[in-house]
Image (cartoon, rainbow, N blue to C red):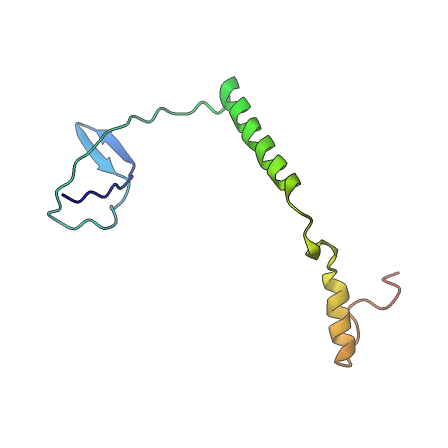
Length: 100
């Protein structure tokens, strides 16, 4: 017997599970087994949920801070556009010395 697990969300109404959408890879007549896991609503304002989100954000910021510097951080798009325009004989978008 070959098994392939799919995850889907359903709503239980009047004794019937109603899927939120079609299940990819299934065709009419396919036999399936269902395991039901009740999903509890999340209280986004609960202290433990706020602390969990803050911890995730801190870990994300720590990972970003640990990345090596991006060599493109010093890239000046406007300067590159001006150089291209001058090379083609066109006027720069911003004249030398900047806007006054």
